[in-house]
Image 1: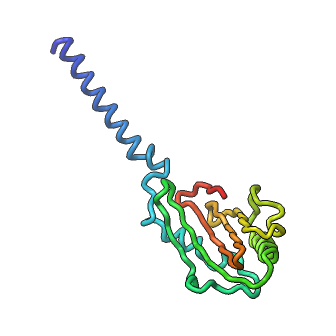
Image 2: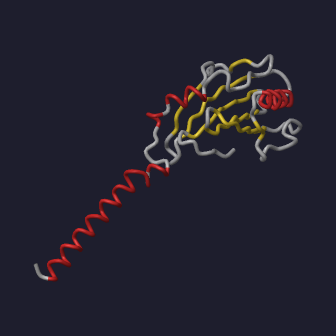
Length: 170
């Protein structure tokens, strides 16, 4: 074998080894570690954790499920690049908006939810639509509890969690 043939053989082997290492990285961890490959087909266990009745604080006395929304809506969303779960419940109430907000602040705290730092301090006093957000570790992964109180005497509670375990922002 000539020196040129040896160099050519070594070069071909080096290229093949590099290709195998690259494929092993991307298929064996590089892309998977970035959350790619996680989809809604794998959401059953996490959805059961997020939609558990013990996760969402109960509504205030006098609140009723909003007509047309009697069943909790649960969904897995994978169209934004991050796969996440949401369990929504819509309610109607006859009381004061501030009373609903105060109720959820107290009930969330009692259930281990922590208010987000972006929560407005005067949300219960404004009379405008209000959004509150709380965070909690739920079965080893971060989750959010959102409350949206509208001026139409309706409010929405939503428990949300990313499927890959990454924290979500309010």
